[in-house]
Image (cartoon, rainbow, N blue to C red; front, side, top):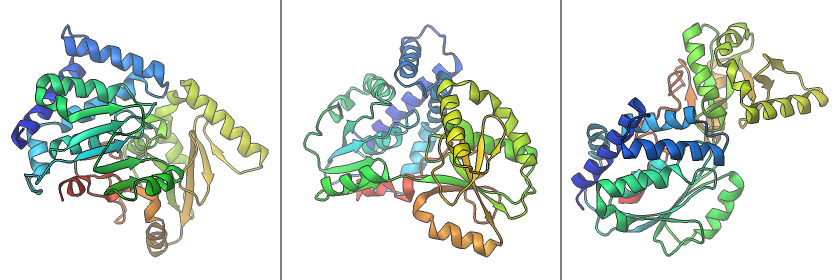
Length: 343
């Protein structure tokens, strides 16, 4: 199968998803099946609401175009000396979080062996099935397993800091990428507009804040006034109506209050001053900075814990509202997956 054939197949998959997003109630076989899979995904994992699953699908429908795929691949060698069997241990914290690895392995010409997360074990296999319908040659290149991984040559594994230690040991004799916990932060000056802060709310609340690209911490000036921030966050007040989010919010609030922790609270989001980065659901950590130099030092010393930095500050790399809209070259943990697979 040539590279052009693989690009064409994935772009057709993107087109099918795009048609579903535009007309989810259409009579097409693909749309009807995908609608059922989206419903089943929520039944299996209550965090995967149809709205958020469709957000993820829409993002991929916009990414999987022939132009985007060709542009992405142009800077890499087009041919492999020999395809390898690549095992991918996937996360399941947000919908389709493992799809970039799935795409990278197959578009580079390798064989894909997927170890799915129990939290997201329906969506990617369904899209894989559609990909095979589009290009039957992919059938021999895709294998999902719920059991022990079969024989493989390379591995990409995503997990917590704790599981990463096991991955490092277990996969030490194979070429590998091991991903750990990371979180994203936002840098505020105090002069952000309401629209910018509302866009930041998207970075905080989308997927209930469960993604590594979701903002879990703010860096603010020492004299920062949170009134404008809370006013902008009001747009997302409906998040508290989700039972799992509400349960986490209530639990964390009770724990903090019993420990006499000072909080800022707007009835659906807790703000806690904390030097950590991985805030619980329904909670956002914040930390003050005294100068740009202080902030630069802080971000540098914690770079291994940070996925991306959001804001209009010169040290920021992502615009407000864009954290969950990564491009094909926005590799997790800053490790070039395609370079690893090809070289």
